[in-house]
Image (spheres, helix red, strand yellow):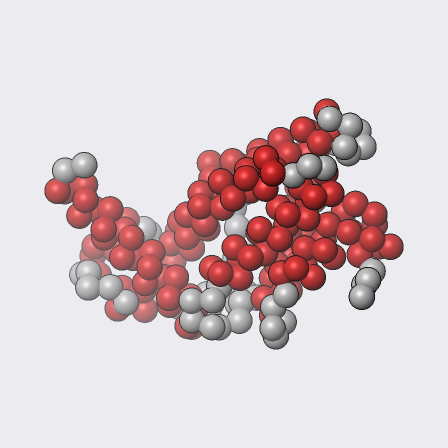
Length: 196
């Protein structure tokens, strides 16, 4: 990578780092592009060389998170001995990842964040990883024959919503969240009930 490419990568990373901090401190709704720019040593025009809006920055942060989470998800699938273990360990990994991502400034999750686009290459790769885990379990006879596409989408949606609810609790409990979500998927409402 040449000097120019390194500078471009550093500028983009500076914007993303500042945006992560600003979104955590102010919340997504209250944050502005100007707030993000103030969090960097860059000129305001430089921001627009990389992003058109705070929405684009937010999507870039989500894609970055998805890129970093995918190998964690794959490792959960490869270590699992059965479908229940895969599901619970994948959910737990996600909840721990989300918790760590949101610890930066100690601010609770902003409920008014936009819904993440699911059609980016990074988000599509996460979906594919979940679907492959389900299909692998079905092929090995560890999960019932069902629509892996619907189940993958349901698991992802459930994980996002339960993860957001977990972050609003004090203290957040990723283990309980994973047990609840896995139990709900595997056994319906009886599986999600508390077992002390």
